[in-house]
Length: 325
Image (cartoon, rainbow, N blue to C red):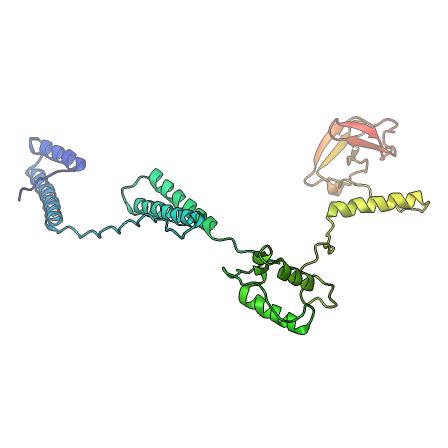
């Protein structure tokens, strides 16, 4: 077996450096011996890697290929029988097409070499096929949210008892258990007389509410939940109606918003050196820690040495001016 030895880029660069040292006459014999040992180690490492690659390649070639499973046979296209309706045949044909789509999409997903675009398209095909299959299922009617599947061949309701009697009610209840409560619509056109008896019996006024689930009242009032906006509008309307009637309506009072005072800045009046807070209060000498002090002119009506700012004057910290409040 032929072995192909390959050195890495780092090994090639180191070999060139070591070979240059070997031919350098200024180097000692000990340095040359070290370079020879290092070159031999690099050569042996490359040969060892080549042998491992050759053994792995031989094992791969000699290994017998695994038997691939035979693909399942494609489903045969359905054919329409003589006694089958066109709608039933189209339904079976649609199911057959969906089976083929699902089979093709599954093969794409099982193929490790398939591209990302093909795999995404296959997943979309599977989702669409499941959705179409659900749409092909027969629609089951419901009564008050309860799904009831009527019998495929419901027999018309027959009973010797007169409508309104206990025997008629027992027979009707038994028929409903066997054929389903929604089977009456199937024989509305085929047996109008029996359907009229059934309709008259179950739509007559009743003293109890035992059958309300089967015949809900469409005119029954529905609960109403007012939104917060509707409650606010109703409250305003009630106040307006009270004013029109001459009644006293208490208006909601809101406390004035007062900005919190900041003790970070103070101002020194240039006239006599009095230091005050922005709202005109005199600053005590022990309160000047961590406070920035700015210079400002005296307010109108200020008397030098009085030790107080005229009442109503405050400092506008944005414009650095005195303003009357």
